[in-house]
Length: 180
Image 1 (cartoon, rainbow, N blue to C red):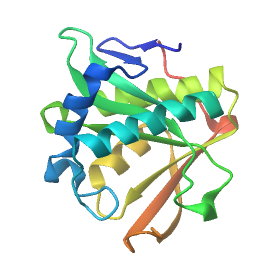
Image 2: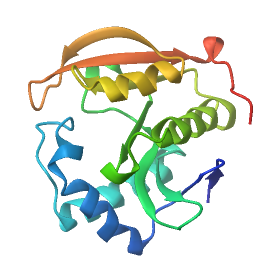
Image 3: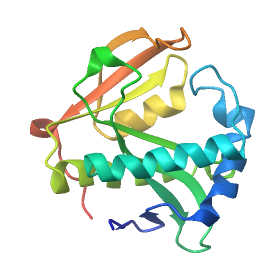
């Protein structure tokens, strides 16, 4: 079981008690406005999502981590690595992604968590390329991507919702690990 720690966060595998707080994140339309068609998700959809994320750990050797606030034990959301099968034109690829509850925005937590996930991907899993995908207009996510050292490489349309997305990329030969 992989667990990563940062100064403020613990990135770990999912537990049953994470479902309700993650469902609360998914129920917030402000959080979800940049996800696919912008629709919210309920607890059962969240449960199915967590099962799929856990299954990717088994099949790929990486996945999405539950992000826990070290000081409180509160679930903030997720970050981690996944295969972006929803966008076949970028495959083969591994995507770094994140989703945090609104109360955790604006504190640098997404960058802190995603930095740990990128380090894990390059240093522990030997990935050669990591992408990140955001809907055009999601400036906050693009700022995180830039802080990770990623550069935009293409703009296209999300095939399931028709919204424009921007794909950022970082290759292992350009990756510079930040100090621990």
